[in-house]
Image (cartoon, rainbow, N blue to C red; front, side):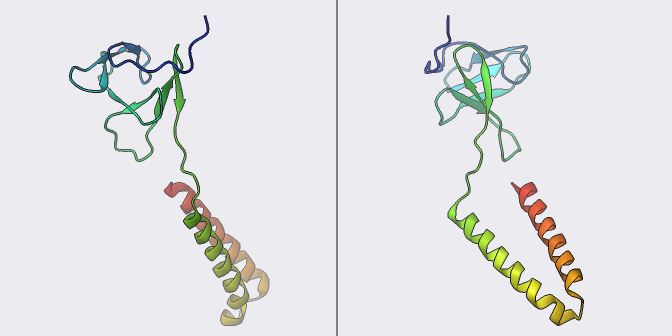
Length: 133
């Protein structure tokens, strides 16, 4: 029998724990949450249909799990780029281009050294942005 993809989570049913995979998620009375009887994690419903996540975690990007009717599928929302992100990227590229034109004249360095410094600066900023998310 194929699992129903649109089957909604029932707050009164037990499900296997998506975190430890050894326990069962048992409904917590008077709440819209489940608790694992093995690892003692607490999970709550998310906005997306059939999706749960840990109730409290120190991480800003929380892992979520989606129930497909038979087992949990790992899924997390990725941040979509916004117009502000795009405008910041364009402004950074314009500043980088202007700095590349002005750096050799201001410091008396040769053009290849200025270009190498700009590439290094661009890599540092790129890794900083990636690790910040």
